[in-house]
Amino acid sequence: MSGQRLYPVLADAVLILHALLVVFVVSAVVFIVIGKLRGWQWVYSPWFRIMHMGAIAIVVAESWFDIVCPLTTLEMWLRMEAGQRTHDRGFIEYWMQNLLYYDAPGWVFVLAYSLFGLLAIAIWLWAPPRFRR
Image (cartoon, rainbow, N blue to C red; front, side, top):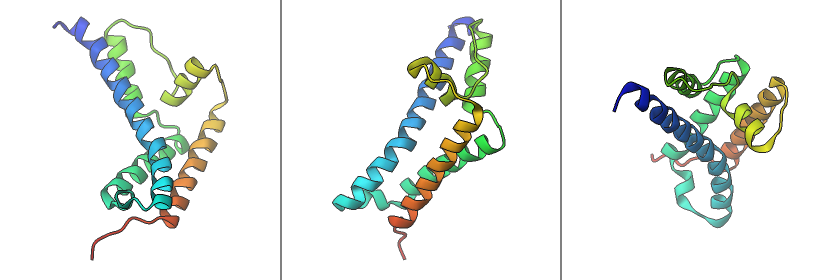
C-alpha cells in the first residue's frame, strides 16, 4: 500500500483510537459509580483507576496549558500527508461542532474538562482503588 493510500487509513485509525479513549474516560466514571453502588469489585482495580485518572489528568493539563492533544496532531499530520482537509481545533471541540452543532469558546471546554477532572477526583475519594498490602 502506497503512502498516499496508507495515510488516510492511519488517520482514521488514530481518530478511532482517540474516540475510544474518550469513551473509556467518560464511561469509566459511570461504571465506577454504578460499580460502587452494586458492589462490583473490578471497579476498585488500581490499574483501571490509575489509567483512568491518568487519562483525565492529561486532558485537563492539555486544556490548562493550551496544548493540542498529540493524537489530534498526529491525525492532522496524517490527513495533510494524504492531501485531506484538516481542522485547527481540539478533538472534542471539533466533533462537538460536527456532531452536535455546538460551538463554544475555548474557555468553556477548559472549564468542562476541569469540572470533569474534579468529578473524577471526588469519585476517587468516594470509591478509592484497593491496593493490595
